[in-house]
Structures are given as structure tokens and as C-alpha cells.
Image (tube, rainbow, N blue to C red):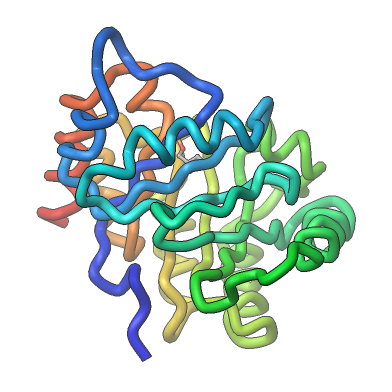
Length: 232
Ligand code: 1GP
């Protein structure tokens, strides 16, 4: 069975709590050449902010996915191609592994056909996601490889997401995660800031995710990362 992300190299993550640069619009964002837009953020996200981004990007031809950080921000919109639901495998307690999910599955008529899960391995202890989930980020390449295997082989995860949010990760660790996986797709996110960094990580991961660059530098910088990912 094919997955939507089988053909992706590049995902742009839009944080609904952050502004776009200058007078850039969502039309500009959708024309960066990214393969998909993931809408989500760790802090201060609301359903209303989510809807604003989805509505603004709906008119353009890029698949939109919501990545909710908690059940309260999940929105139902026909403009969404689907949902990417994170589980933090190295969280400090069960809430971010099954606890939040146990609340989320109570949503009426949950559309499983459009729902996919991501096994997060959080690597940057200073990132908001690490603090929120109390993640154990003291992991070497062997640990990451082991988590990736647990995610794929024991929990049947189709996406393993190596999350260095806010900092550029160690390519050797990304390579180790890639080696550990047979079928699951490896997503890498964190600190990608231009052509070279995109190309480096896309040389190991199946999909690279670019986040802050959009809000800090804008669409031209993002376009370079699309090129780097495509050339890898
Ligand atoms: C964040 O993995 C993404 O969830 C992207 O990270 O913001 O550092 O690009 P950056």
C-alpha cells in the first residue's frame, strides 16, 4: 500500500502561533515547492489559529496536514488532506505516548482513513517539545537506532520522526536511524537553514522538515532547502 509521503522529500511545518515574514502570504508559502505543509506547533496553539492557517492555505495546490500537539487543537476541515499524530517515544512519562491520545480518540467520527501516526524521537533538550514532554534526550546513535526499531517493529509506526527542533542534528545519528528502518519513512527536522544543510540531512532521511526558517527568514530561504532536498 502506498502512503502519501512516499513521494515527498520536503515538508514545510507552519507554526500557527508564528507570523510569516514581512508581507509574505500563504500563496507564497505554498509556492515554495514543498511537497506538503504540516500545520502544528508546541506552544500557544489554538483551534482558531489552526483554522486560520488552513483556511489561508486551502486555495493552493499543496497537501495540508494538521499535526496537533494536543486533542484540543484538532480541527475538522475538508481542506485538510489528513492528520499526522505524534507520539513521543522518549517522553518522560506515558501522557505523550498514550495519555493525550486516549483523549483524542474520543472525538466523534474520527477519520481513521486520513489519520497517520508519527513516532517522534526528540533530540534537543532545549526545544519546547522536549521540555513539554520531559523527553530523555541523552541518546546516542545506538539508542536512536533502538528506538527506531521499537517504533517500526513493535509498534508498527509508518513514520519515525527524528526531531532536533531548533538545532541542526548529527548526520551520523540520522544515518543510524535510517539504517535501523526497513519500511518506515524517516522524517528529520531541526535547524535546516539552507541548501547544504537540507541536502546533508536529505541524504539520510526520506523526508526533511523545515520549520523556523519560514518564520525567521521567509520563503526564498525555504525554496533553497527544497532544492537541497531534491538534489540529495
Ligand atoms: C520542528 O522539526 C521541525 O518541529 C523543524 O525544526 O524549526 O528547527 O526547522 P526547525
